[in-house]
Amino acid sequence: MKGFVMINAEPGAEKAVYDALTAIRGVREVVPVYGETDFIAIADVDGIADLNMIVLQVREIHGVSSTETILGMELKF
Image (cartoon, rainbow, N blue to C red; front, side, top):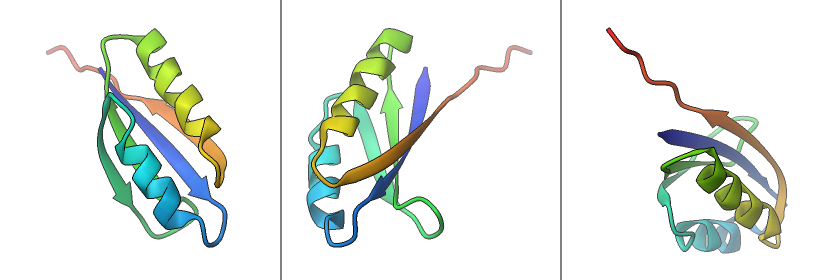
């Protein structure tokens, strides 16, 4: 399953936050973006408990001011 964590960083902390995000196990990609969000971290996880652990690690990063998490869904046709 995929989780998408939208992350806002405090001004001036973007590089340190980016570096810390890329070091988190389970985070497949970190994308800097324009708009209300500074980064989107894409996580590949086995379940919601794994995603929860990643989000908790993200929130502990010095310079992270807020997060919003979206859980990807699987379409079955």
